[in-house]
Amino acid sequence: MNGFHCIQQVALLVTVVGVLVVANAPNKALASNSASAFVHNVIYSNRIAIFSKSYCPYSLRAKHIFRELHEQPFVVELDLRDDGSHIQNVLLDLVGRRTVPQVFVNGKHIGGSDDLKTAVLSGQLQNLLSRS
Image 1 (cartoon, one colour):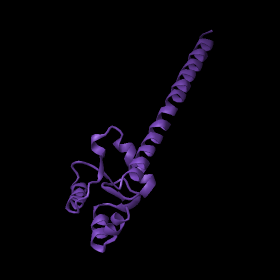
Image 2 (cartoon, rainbow, N blue to C red; image 1 turned 180 degrees about the vertical axis):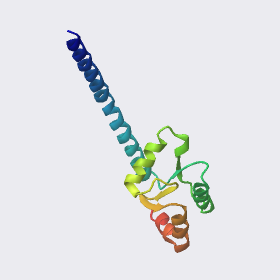
Image 3 (cartoon, rainbow, N blue to C red; image 1 turned 120 degrees about the vertical axis):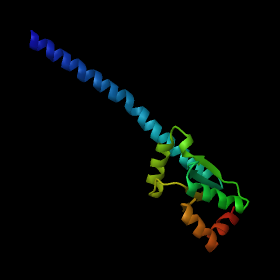
Image 4 (cartoon, helix red, strand yellow; image 1 turned 90 degrees about the vertical axis):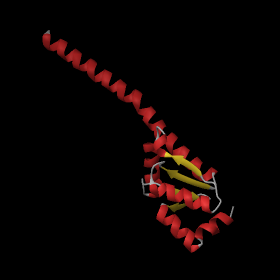
């Protein structure tokens, strides 16, 4: 009878763990889908979008470049959001980088701060901005 009682306890434990795993799985999928939907919405709903961190010197430089051009980007400060790391994972899947800033103009990925500076110097950024 002692062995039977032990088997019942193990079966109950396995059932409880299974229920917990199943109950939590949709929430994780929703969080991931939600972050992905948010990122795509930001990129395609705004003329200029920057995924940034408020303390990052490269992010500050990117925002400064747009200020000098008298342009107002839509900025997502990842360090000020609960889902910032989820958004960075979406950016990794989307553009191959988790680093900030990540700059988009008219839905086109420009890249980080150095890429933005290069786009300004080459005239590519001004061309993209004039298309909207």
